[in-house]
Image 1 (cartoon, rainbow, N blue to C red):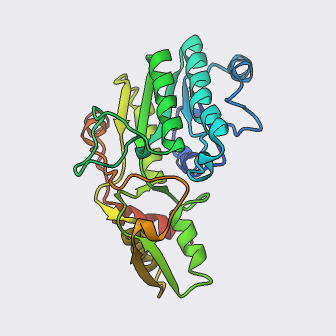
Image 2 (image 1 turned 90 degrees about the vertical axis):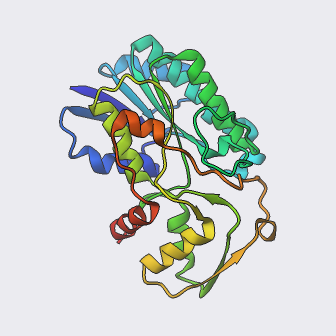
Length: 285
């Protein structure tokens, strides 16, 4: 039996892993949120690993993801996203466990006009992006047996995310304005969960840094329109420029990612974001 620890168990990615875990034979999952395991406290992490049956994999879904709030809660963002990641890496190294850590496209500044590869030099333009990048650095310095997976624009039928926000706003509004000059790829958390589980079940030892998202390119405006159309909602959607909707944190203007590397080690076929959105909308009902 392979024992898999999943942190951040109340979040959308961990919830998608829970949905799929029912079909996984030979895997035993241990789910924790911060109440059961404070990843920011090294002693807590060490004690948890020692008092539970041997943990073979740790999927770190725990993260500080409030992008705008992070601009003022700098210490908290770094504590969870960097120190927490380091603590898990230290204990995984001690215990011989593999760490699968989820990072973000926000480690880039968005100045490119072609998909980002794993060899591109990160240059975050927000506290959130900087804290996630520091988490990557700490893991890479500490632990050989790791998979760091950068993803983008994550959404699902679970938790709080752009899709759920748009559907909630549609309940009380006839018209919604959405930024149209930030370009990326919406990624269904269920698809990312499948990739993570494939890494575990295939016993991959191709450790390192990877990019994963769905296929295709979209703006937030495109994403919102597709959500409404897929949900059969008649909402007038108006494109606006970033400067018309100022936020405390800067976002990358372009953050499409190249998935060639992760496809080569997993053999997965990445779905187009529009196809995966249909699946998420259907699961949301």
